[in-house]
Image (cartoon, rainbow, N blue to C red; front, side, top):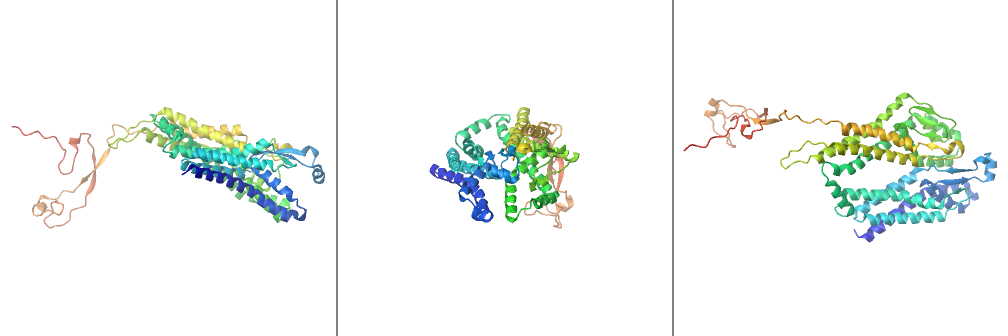
Length: 484
């Protein structure tokens, strides 16, 4: 594909990703302005509010400063007039990341991955700059450099990752392809280490995210009554219920990562001095947000068995990596025979690499899913990245080491393989004497009745090709040349 076309398509991808994110905030806020505020709505504040929410969804912290008249009307202490809002609704960032990764994959398949990645990054950064310059508000302020850099990184990192991974896997030429071929040419299985580390780590991380999602779904089913009770206690009208539901849907990825941390063991916090983990739950007064009704007030020690999930995922990653490593280290010969080597060095490095990849990914997820939603006790919510990374890394390492470092059963040289010889049941000499031959040249009985079907008989295989037993002639032996 021509580079100009790739450039245009990458720019369109970036523009669409930004436009969809902005529309996802602008549309519901417009309805709120029309049906909630009515004639008192200040339409000049609609765009700044929408743009600020889009920036917040792309990991930009907000510096909230409540006006004095609102504090007096709501009865809020002046000490809580200003605070940082940094626990982002990750649905916006997740959409941008998925869209960016797909754009990178398409650019790589079009043989212009650098052009596509650079163009997409620059276009999205330009849109983020335009939004930052036109959306200043007095209530929720942002640092301009953060408002430009953070959304650009949210889009650029998955974009480049998708392009590089696809280029590494599928490209037939280019700098990355030559570098890949040089690495994969290494002997003893070392050429597959990098690819297997990424593949195994991705298996473990995706499995952990899935486990977190399953835990959230089960919690919603079990504690759905508490969620409904909190909705009723809020005393909101239909429009307010819709707004609250949409806001909670935007925070679903955050809840999934909290579930991941719960499965791994460290758990998460719902305020300063609180902890929710399989080992125990310590909760104080928590916000009356309906979705937080899924948080259990107490836990049972049986939930500690959830730590087996990361171990099992590590074992699955190790099994996939070792299967590939053994196949590469023992290529088939032209005769169909394979060696039986199992190099130890690459297996150790792969196990450590999978654990490091999973731990680093868990730390990143824990970082983006933690932050503040208010002053005081609400300044600390979510998992701590360090303990989460350590727990996930050790658990995945244990599972991967079980499959990668355990001895593999090898076939004993003393055990001769079994071959199956096709043996025809013997027919009597009397019956064969009067018969002729069938169409295949085999002797037929005199009464032309069909003989019994061919029956496979297991026979020991003799390595000497001249001593292979057969049903009709017995062992083949070398014949002496005729004398004289």
